[in-house]
Amino acid sequence: MPVDKSISSQRHRQLARLLRELRIRTGMSQAEVAELIDEDQSFVSRYEGGLRRLDLVELEQVAFALGVPLRQIVELFEEIETP
Image 1 (cartoon, rainbow, N blue to C red):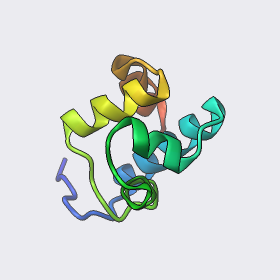
Image 2: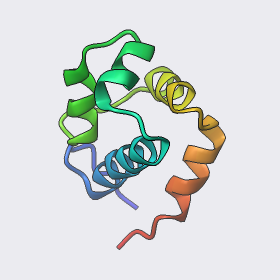
Image 3: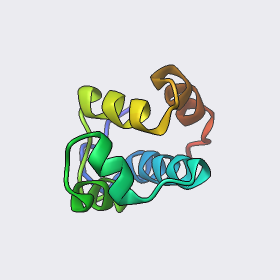
């Protein structure tokens, strides 16, 4: 199966949407997450909006800030149906 490396791939958008939903569920603002990961609010806005990819270390930091184990984020992501 070919891998779509485009920043706007469907799987990338699904991950961005999942991270946004998790943040909202925790009741945190983008600014609060940004402060915990030592970034600007625009950083959070860009990855949630699908304009920026996160590397594994950044994803781990976001998971910690949200209080969600990284493994759980991966499991939730794997449960999302692909076309």
